[in-house]
Image (tube, rainbow, N blue to C red):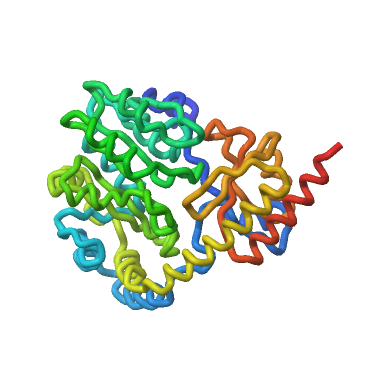
Length: 372
Protein backbone atom coordinates (compact mmCIF):
# COMPACT_ATOMS: atom_id res chain seq x y z
CA UNK A 1 0.00 0.00 0.00
CA UNK A 2 1.35 3.41 -0.95
CA UNK A 3 2.14 5.76 1.94
CA UNK A 4 -0.04 8.80 2.47
CA UNK A 5 1.43 12.20 1.78
CA UNK A 6 1.69 12.88 5.51
CA UNK A 7 3.89 9.77 5.84
CA UNK A 8 6.31 10.42 3.00
CA UNK A 9 6.62 14.20 2.96
CA UNK A 10 9.33 15.77 5.10
CA UNK A 11 9.59 19.57 4.95
CA UNK A 12 13.06 20.66 3.79
CA UNK A 13 14.80 21.75 6.99
CA UNK A 14 16.60 24.65 5.30
CA UNK A 15 13.19 26.24 4.58
CA UNK A 16 12.02 26.11 8.21
CA UNK A 17 10.86 29.50 9.41
CA UNK A 18 11.07 31.16 6.00
CA UNK A 19 8.06 33.13 4.79
CA UNK A 20 6.61 33.34 1.30
CA UNK A 21 6.12 36.42 -0.80
CA UNK A 22 2.57 37.73 -0.59
CA UNK A 23 1.41 38.95 -4.02
CA UNK A 24 -1.46 41.34 -4.59
CA UNK A 25 -4.85 39.65 -4.74
CA UNK A 26 -6.10 39.05 -8.32
CA UNK A 27 -9.16 41.03 -9.42
CA UNK A 28 -11.07 37.91 -10.50
CA UNK A 29 -10.52 36.23 -7.14
CA UNK A 30 -11.89 39.22 -5.23
CA UNK A 31 -14.91 39.39 -7.53
CA UNK A 32 -15.64 35.69 -6.92
CA UNK A 33 -15.07 35.80 -3.17
CA UNK A 34 -17.06 38.96 -2.47
CA UNK A 35 -19.58 38.86 -5.31
CA UNK A 36 -18.49 42.25 -6.63
CA UNK A 37 -18.98 43.36 -10.22
CA UNK A 38 -16.37 46.12 -10.18
CA UNK A 39 -12.97 45.80 -8.53
CA UNK A 40 -9.94 48.05 -8.95
CA UNK A 41 -6.45 46.84 -8.17
CA UNK A 42 -4.00 49.35 -6.70
CA UNK A 43 -1.78 46.80 -5.01
CA UNK A 44 1.04 45.79 -7.36
CA UNK A 45 2.41 49.07 -8.76
CA UNK A 46 1.24 48.25 -12.27
CA UNK A 47 0.91 50.67 -15.17
CA UNK A 48 -2.75 51.83 -15.30
CA UNK A 49 -2.38 52.66 -19.00
CA UNK A 50 -1.36 49.12 -19.86
CA UNK A 51 1.38 48.21 -22.34
CA UNK A 52 2.42 50.22 -25.36
CA UNK A 53 0.39 49.45 -28.50
CA UNK A 54 3.74 48.81 -30.17
CA UNK A 55 4.53 46.16 -27.55
CA UNK A 56 1.13 44.51 -28.07
CA UNK A 57 1.67 44.33 -31.83
CA UNK A 58 5.16 42.87 -31.37
CA UNK A 59 3.85 40.27 -28.89
CA UNK A 60 1.13 39.18 -31.30
CA UNK A 61 3.62 38.80 -34.11
CA UNK A 62 5.96 36.79 -31.90
CA UNK A 63 3.14 34.39 -31.02
CA UNK A 64 3.20 33.12 -34.59
CA UNK A 65 6.54 31.46 -33.77
CA UNK A 66 5.60 30.30 -30.28
CA UNK A 67 6.49 26.74 -31.28
CA UNK A 68 10.15 27.81 -31.46
CA UNK A 69 12.32 28.16 -28.39
CA UNK A 70 13.26 31.77 -27.65
CA UNK A 71 16.69 33.21 -28.29
CA UNK A 72 18.55 32.17 -25.14
CA UNK A 73 20.78 35.24 -25.38
CA UNK A 74 17.90 37.67 -26.00
CA UNK A 75 20.13 39.13 -28.71
CA UNK A 76 17.70 41.67 -30.18
CA UNK A 77 16.48 42.90 -26.81
CA UNK A 78 20.02 43.25 -25.48
CA UNK A 79 20.98 45.15 -28.64
CA UNK A 80 18.06 47.51 -28.10
CA UNK A 81 19.02 47.98 -24.46
CA UNK A 82 22.64 48.50 -25.43
CA UNK A 83 21.69 51.34 -27.79
CA UNK A 84 19.24 52.80 -25.29
CA UNK A 85 21.62 52.77 -22.32
CA UNK A 86 24.94 53.31 -24.06
CA UNK A 87 26.58 50.16 -22.67
CA UNK A 88 27.95 47.12 -24.56
CA UNK A 89 25.69 44.08 -24.89
CA UNK A 90 28.29 42.10 -22.94
CA UNK A 91 27.31 44.15 -19.89
CA UNK A 92 23.64 43.16 -20.08
CA UNK A 93 21.69 40.15 -18.90
CA UNK A 94 17.95 39.61 -19.44
CA UNK A 95 15.81 37.68 -16.99
CA UNK A 96 12.25 36.76 -16.18
CA UNK A 97 11.69 40.05 -14.37
CA UNK A 98 14.36 41.83 -12.36
CA UNK A 99 13.70 39.43 -9.46
CA UNK A 100 15.08 36.64 -11.65
CA UNK A 101 18.37 38.54 -11.91
CA UNK A 102 18.38 38.98 -8.13
CA UNK A 103 17.93 35.24 -7.67
CA UNK A 104 20.84 34.63 -10.04
CA UNK A 105 23.00 36.95 -7.94
CA UNK A 106 22.28 34.93 -4.81
CA UNK A 107 23.04 31.67 -6.62
CA UNK A 108 26.25 32.96 -8.16
CA UNK A 109 27.78 34.92 -5.30
CA UNK A 110 26.54 33.49 -2.00
CA UNK A 111 28.35 30.39 -0.89
CA UNK A 112 28.04 28.65 2.49
CA UNK A 113 28.73 31.14 5.27
CA UNK A 114 28.53 34.20 3.02
CA UNK A 115 26.08 37.00 3.73
CA UNK A 116 24.23 39.88 2.09
CA UNK A 117 23.49 43.22 3.74
CA UNK A 118 19.87 44.33 3.32
CA UNK A 119 17.82 47.20 4.71
CA UNK A 120 15.12 46.22 7.20
CA UNK A 121 12.13 47.50 5.19
CA UNK A 122 13.54 46.95 1.72
CA UNK A 123 11.83 44.91 -1.00
CA UNK A 124 10.92 41.62 0.73
CA UNK A 125 12.30 39.39 -2.03
CA UNK A 126 15.88 40.44 -1.21
CA UNK A 127 15.70 38.86 2.23
CA UNK A 128 13.57 35.91 1.14
CA UNK A 129 15.90 34.97 -1.73
CA UNK A 130 19.05 35.30 0.36
CA UNK A 131 17.67 33.37 3.33
CA UNK A 132 16.37 30.59 1.09
CA UNK A 133 19.85 30.39 -0.38
CA UNK A 134 21.93 30.25 2.80
CA UNK A 135 20.14 32.22 5.58
CA UNK A 136 22.74 34.90 5.11
CA UNK A 137 20.56 38.03 5.20
CA UNK A 138 21.95 40.72 7.52
CA UNK A 139 19.21 43.27 8.17
CA UNK A 140 20.06 46.89 8.96
CA UNK A 141 17.42 49.25 10.43
CA UNK A 142 16.24 52.14 8.28
CA UNK A 143 16.62 55.78 9.23
CA UNK A 144 13.41 57.76 8.75
CA UNK A 145 12.03 54.99 6.54
CA UNK A 146 15.03 55.30 4.21
CA UNK A 147 18.03 53.03 3.60
CA UNK A 148 20.73 53.99 6.11
CA UNK A 149 23.67 53.54 3.77
CA UNK A 150 26.27 54.49 6.38
CA UNK A 151 25.00 51.79 8.74
CA UNK A 152 24.79 49.30 5.88
CA UNK A 153 28.39 50.00 5.00
CA UNK A 154 29.39 49.35 8.62
CA UNK A 155 27.49 46.04 8.54
CA UNK A 156 29.75 44.69 5.77
CA UNK A 157 32.21 42.11 7.05
CA UNK A 158 34.70 39.69 5.53
CA UNK A 159 31.92 37.27 4.53
CA UNK A 160 29.71 39.87 2.84
CA UNK A 161 29.38 39.36 -0.90
CA UNK A 162 26.30 41.44 -1.79
CA UNK A 163 24.75 44.69 -0.55
CA UNK A 164 21.16 45.30 -1.70
CA UNK A 165 19.83 48.85 -2.13
CA UNK A 166 16.45 49.55 -3.76
CA UNK A 167 16.43 53.11 -5.07
CA UNK A 168 13.63 54.20 -4.93
CA UNK A 169 12.64 51.60 -2.36
CA UNK A 170 9.58 49.41 -2.41
CA UNK A 171 7.42 49.56 -0.26
CA UNK A 172 8.37 52.94 1.24
CA UNK A 173 9.00 54.93 -1.95
CA UNK A 174 11.93 56.67 -0.26
CA UNK A 175 15.30 57.11 -1.93
CA UNK A 176 19.01 57.78 -1.45
CA UNK A 177 20.93 60.67 -2.96
CA UNK A 178 23.92 60.45 -5.24
CA UNK A 179 26.44 61.43 -2.56
CA UNK A 180 25.18 58.71 -0.20
CA UNK A 181 25.42 56.00 -2.83
CA UNK A 182 28.85 57.20 -3.97
CA UNK A 183 30.10 57.06 -0.38
CA UNK A 184 28.79 53.52 0.06
CA UNK A 185 30.45 52.36 -3.15
CA UNK A 186 33.75 54.00 -2.22
CA UNK A 187 33.81 52.16 1.10
CA UNK A 188 33.08 48.66 -0.18
CA UNK A 189 35.98 46.23 0.22
CA UNK A 190 37.16 44.06 -2.65
CA UNK A 191 34.84 41.17 -3.41
CA UNK A 192 31.62 42.97 -2.42
CA UNK A 193 29.05 43.85 -5.08
CA UNK A 194 26.42 46.57 -4.66
CA UNK A 195 23.04 45.55 -6.11
CA UNK A 196 21.12 48.71 -7.07
CA UNK A 197 17.51 47.81 -7.74
CA UNK A 198 16.09 50.60 -9.92
CA UNK A 199 12.69 49.12 -10.75
CA UNK A 200 11.07 52.58 -10.47
CA UNK A 201 13.77 54.82 -11.90
CA UNK A 202 11.59 56.05 -14.80
CA UNK A 203 9.31 57.87 -12.33
CA UNK A 204 12.12 59.81 -10.64
CA UNK A 205 12.22 63.60 -10.98
CA UNK A 206 14.98 64.53 -8.50
CA UNK A 207 18.32 65.99 -9.68
CA UNK A 208 20.22 64.32 -6.81
CA UNK A 209 19.02 60.85 -7.75
CA UNK A 210 21.97 58.69 -8.86
CA UNK A 211 21.76 56.78 -12.13
CA UNK A 212 23.30 53.41 -11.31
CA UNK A 213 24.26 52.74 -14.92
CA UNK A 214 26.69 55.66 -14.68
CA UNK A 215 28.43 53.82 -11.83
CA UNK A 216 28.66 50.67 -13.95
CA UNK A 217 30.16 52.67 -16.83
CA UNK A 218 32.85 53.95 -14.45
CA UNK A 219 33.80 50.43 -13.47
CA UNK A 220 32.34 50.53 -9.96
CA UNK A 221 31.47 47.22 -8.21
CA UNK A 222 27.77 47.66 -9.00
CA UNK A 223 25.02 45.76 -10.78
CA UNK A 224 21.84 47.62 -11.65
CA UNK A 225 18.58 45.69 -11.93
CA UNK A 226 15.61 47.13 -13.83
CA UNK A 227 12.27 45.89 -15.08
CA UNK A 228 9.70 46.24 -17.86
CA UNK A 229 6.90 45.51 -15.37
CA UNK A 230 6.27 49.06 -14.15
CA UNK A 231 6.57 52.06 -16.49
CA UNK A 232 6.47 49.81 -19.58
CA UNK A 233 3.38 47.92 -18.40
CA UNK A 234 4.64 44.39 -19.09
CA UNK A 235 4.26 42.83 -15.66
CA UNK A 236 2.30 39.92 -17.11
CA UNK A 237 5.13 38.96 -19.47
CA UNK A 238 7.91 38.92 -16.82
CA UNK A 239 10.99 40.54 -18.31
CA UNK A 240 13.75 42.54 -16.65
CA UNK A 241 17.47 43.05 -16.98
CA UNK A 242 20.75 43.68 -15.22
CA UNK A 243 23.64 45.98 -16.12
CA UNK A 244 27.10 45.18 -14.79
CA UNK A 245 30.71 44.49 -15.69
CA UNK A 246 31.18 41.61 -18.16
CA UNK A 247 32.77 39.51 -15.41
CA UNK A 248 29.65 39.82 -13.25
CA UNK A 249 27.39 39.01 -16.19
CA UNK A 250 29.54 35.99 -16.97
CA UNK A 251 29.10 34.64 -13.45
CA UNK A 252 25.32 35.00 -13.72
CA UNK A 253 25.24 33.21 -17.06
CA UNK A 254 26.80 30.15 -15.43
CA UNK A 255 23.76 29.67 -13.17
CA UNK A 256 21.02 31.04 -15.45
CA UNK A 257 18.35 28.78 -16.93
CA UNK A 258 18.86 28.47 -20.69
CA UNK A 259 15.51 29.90 -21.84
CA UNK A 260 14.54 32.26 -19.04
CA UNK A 261 12.44 34.73 -21.05
CA UNK A 262 9.88 33.88 -23.70
CA UNK A 263 9.99 34.88 -27.35
CA UNK A 264 6.86 36.99 -26.75
CA UNK A 265 8.36 38.79 -23.75
CA UNK A 266 11.57 39.63 -25.59
CA UNK A 267 9.73 41.03 -28.61
CA UNK A 268 7.30 43.06 -26.52
CA UNK A 269 10.07 44.50 -24.34
CA UNK A 270 12.16 45.63 -27.32
CA UNK A 271 9.12 47.34 -28.82
CA UNK A 272 8.15 48.90 -25.48
CA UNK A 273 11.64 50.35 -25.12
CA UNK A 274 11.20 52.15 -28.43
CA UNK A 275 7.86 53.71 -27.45
CA UNK A 276 9.21 56.58 -25.38
CA UNK A 277 5.95 58.52 -25.81
CA UNK A 278 4.03 55.82 -23.95
CA UNK A 279 6.49 55.91 -21.05
CA UNK A 280 6.27 59.71 -20.98
CA UNK A 281 2.46 59.59 -20.77
CA UNK A 282 2.67 57.02 -18.00
CA UNK A 283 5.14 59.07 -15.98
CA UNK A 284 3.21 62.32 -16.43
CA UNK A 285 -0.03 60.70 -15.30
CA UNK A 286 1.64 59.04 -12.32
CA UNK A 287 3.36 62.19 -11.08
CA UNK A 288 0.22 64.31 -11.33
CA UNK A 289 -2.04 61.72 -9.71
CA UNK A 290 0.51 60.84 -7.02
CA UNK A 291 0.62 64.48 -5.92
CA UNK A 292 -3.19 64.56 -5.82
CA UNK A 293 -3.52 61.31 -3.83
CA UNK A 294 -0.74 62.19 -1.39
CA UNK A 295 -2.20 65.67 -0.88
CA UNK A 296 -5.66 64.25 -0.19
CA UNK A 297 -4.26 61.79 2.35
CA UNK A 298 -2.27 64.49 4.14
CA UNK A 299 -5.36 66.74 4.20
CA UNK A 300 -7.24 63.94 5.97
CA UNK A 301 -4.55 63.69 8.64
CA UNK A 302 -2.61 60.66 7.44
CA UNK A 303 1.18 60.49 7.59
CA UNK A 304 2.45 59.93 4.04
CA UNK A 305 6.00 58.96 3.12
CA UNK A 306 7.71 60.93 0.35
CA UNK A 307 7.78 58.72 -2.74
CA UNK A 308 9.71 58.82 -6.02
CA UNK A 309 7.95 55.68 -7.26
CA UNK A 310 4.47 55.02 -8.68
CA UNK A 311 2.82 54.44 -5.30
CA UNK A 312 2.12 56.15 -2.00
CA UNK A 313 2.67 54.61 1.44
CA UNK A 314 0.72 55.96 4.40
CA UNK A 315 0.13 55.28 8.10
CA UNK A 316 -3.51 54.33 8.69
CA UNK A 317 -3.29 54.99 12.44
CA UNK A 318 -4.61 51.49 13.14
CA UNK A 319 -3.96 47.94 11.99
CA UNK A 320 -3.35 48.35 8.28
CA UNK A 321 -4.66 44.90 7.43
CA UNK A 322 -8.00 45.79 9.00
CA UNK A 323 -8.26 48.84 6.74
CA UNK A 324 -7.13 46.68 3.81
CA UNK A 325 -10.02 44.24 4.45
CA UNK A 326 -12.57 47.03 4.68
CA UNK A 327 -11.32 48.53 1.42
CA UNK A 328 -11.42 45.07 -0.14
CA UNK A 329 -15.09 44.75 0.76
CA UNK A 330 -15.68 47.86 -1.37
CA UNK A 331 -13.77 46.47 -4.33
CA UNK A 332 -10.48 48.33 -3.80
CA UNK A 333 -7.33 46.19 -3.56
CA UNK A 334 -4.30 47.83 -1.91
CA UNK A 335 -1.23 46.33 -0.21
CA UNK A 336 -1.02 45.79 3.55
CA UNK A 337 2.55 46.08 4.83
CA UNK A 338 2.56 43.93 7.97
CA UNK A 339 4.84 41.40 6.16
CA UNK A 340 7.40 44.23 6.16
CA UNK A 341 6.98 44.90 9.88
CA UNK A 342 4.90 48.01 9.06
CA UNK A 343 1.66 46.95 10.68
CA UNK A 344 -0.17 50.28 10.49
CA UNK A 345 0.85 51.12 6.93
CA UNK A 346 -0.75 50.59 3.52
CA UNK A 347 0.76 51.01 0.08
CA UNK A 348 -1.51 52.20 -2.70
CA UNK A 349 -0.44 52.16 -6.34
CA UNK A 350 -1.22 55.21 -8.46
CA UNK A 351 -3.91 54.38 -11.00
CA UNK A 352 -6.02 56.44 -13.34
CA UNK A 353 -7.77 59.55 -12.05
CA UNK A 354 -11.02 57.59 -11.76
CA UNK A 355 -9.38 54.69 -9.89
CA UNK A 356 -7.64 57.04 -7.48
CA UNK A 357 -10.88 58.89 -6.80
CA UNK A 358 -12.60 55.57 -6.09
CA UNK A 359 -9.86 54.66 -3.62
CA UNK A 360 -10.11 57.97 -1.78
CA UNK A 361 -13.90 57.70 -1.58
CA UNK A 362 -13.66 54.12 -0.28
CA UNK A 363 -11.04 55.09 2.29
CA UNK A 364 -13.24 57.91 3.52
CA UNK A 365 -16.16 55.50 3.84
CA UNK A 366 -14.30 52.77 5.71
CA UNK A 367 -12.63 55.32 7.98
CA UNK A 368 -16.02 56.72 8.95
CA UNK A 369 -17.35 53.21 9.51
CA UNK A 370 -14.40 52.34 11.76
CA UNK A 371 -15.08 55.28 14.09
CA UNK A 372 -16.96 54.53 17.31
